[in-house]
Image (tube, rainbow over all chains, first blue to last red):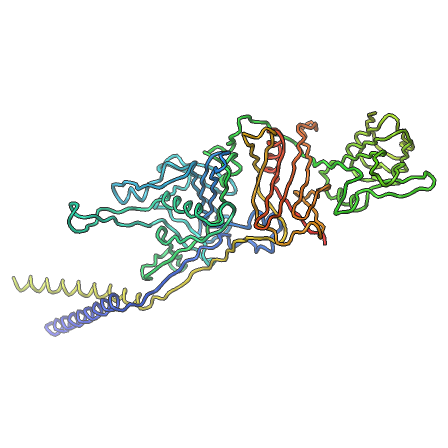
Length: 432
Length: 175
């Protein structure tokens, strides 16, 4: 028993000596070895890992998936005094660590005016952690729909932008979390004239980040436009890497200096916001139909048609739309549409074509006597207008076939010849 | 009794020392093993010029100047400068939302076009006919795009059209 006790005591002494050595080594290394480690986190695009590469996307898909950044801002400064001043900041992130597109989510804040931050008085750390600024409108975007479900920091169905919030983001195609944790201590002289003592702690909130972001936008040397800048978020946000083995987001408490850089895409406009379609969230003041116009107009429509008014001067890619064939029999030119123009209109089914032929136009190089065979065959025409002096206008076979001509307008002294074989649909004739 | 208390305190101190030693050891190991690192990379580049004119957006909002008595509603935007536009030597095609525009006026450093658009209601009757004037000026440092129409009603229908369809305006060189 006595031997065991002696061995135990020896081991204890040995462990104590080892501990002292380790403590001395640690103190020496920690305070006297000046090696510095720097960690850099670069937050690039936040496109999901299952999204195809840009070159594989169709044009429609590219519009939808081309860009997604962690921070996106829009500022309508209203310098022209033609709308309302509007500031918006949106955070794009993921709801899971798989980083797939079904985990997309965005949360943003909107301020009508030019926001200036201020110091928030808090009674406890917990209050600082939970505080959500009431000056802003908040929006969430899920599954392509943006909505505002924020009704105060308690009981909200929207994501609350406070210091407890951790977003999952993508860095290097790996999941990381990002959280607003920045704070600093305020010092002052004890009783106003003695030594400096800590007087309190200031906790950054999302209003501070918002203010800083818009200061950066306002101070950019290129002025109004759409640009990208890289913000240094090190003072505000802490980034934690996801450990796939332990399935935990681990804080980096070893690296001496950690820098967090994130891309900000912004739109800076000298106009004021006039309509909710200009908002990043499709809403202004939580109103998706927001419009500063005094007079609201019902713009409901079924279909739009692009109207083409063609005449002898119309050109396509520098070439005339109409071509002319001389006929010795009729001693004049027959007009028809060029194949390029026919092909063009065939590719634009919503195009509505009106054709005006002014036979007496002095600038006309050719004396037109009629429409050639198949002149407009297959081209959908809404209105054909023929103006001129007293003459017969010849319509050769199928010149207006399959045109679905609605209205034919002609001056009284023009006589149409061959109409029955020229067209295979009903139309209205108007004498001008 | 004093000896026992002294021993207990001694053992407690030894225990605390060992625990502190373990923590310092772990911390020392972490600090020695720590390495600088860079996670990810940032690959953005602001473009200050473009090779050919291309403008796209999800909406267009027209503004009316209160002091303007021509009832003009316009949308103006400064865009990236276009490097090599030359309306005198080259031929161009103007395309708005897949519609090739005819009767465009192409000058040395500017393009003007007029678009007529009819809007039909569900009975197939025209409820609005709007004319949109497009102006693109290629300046040395930027490109100025202006879309203009007259009247609040025309502006509202065109805004609705661009909200529904977006706007894609291209000026393409014909080779």
